[in-house]
Image (cartoon, one colour):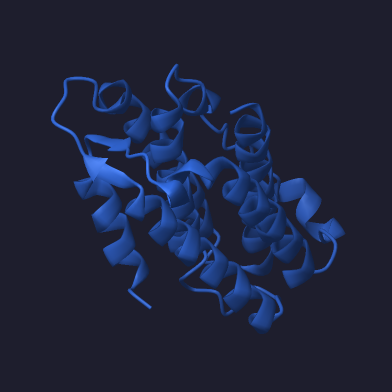
Length: 183
């Protein structure tokens, strides 16, 4: 498996992108819904209930919902790919203090990785002026995930920081699910 940093690099290189229509790409919204449902199930399964002692540490990261509301379906696909890459990256490092089922965590990472590859196969470079909402969306996503990453680092990747991040990724995937159901 390619390292997480490499995946982020690939995502950043694809700055002006659009979805091409091929038979496998036409079924993408349906496939994404299945992947998201599976990912949510794995997120729940990988850990136990949210620890009570972590409630006082809860934090609001404020997901930039506007990145999932552009007019074009292709743009939403690119945003979703970017989100999956960030989630994959976060869940690929310093997990020693996370009290999670490793097998389920591996399944979660593999599911995300395969979906990123699938999305990348449907995305090609296009030389147009409307690089998905002129990079604003990409920067908002980057800032959002940097907040989570900094939070984990500040808390030295402790159990509560991982549980709070897991809960946040759950919310993030639920938002994507809501959007893909409308597509």
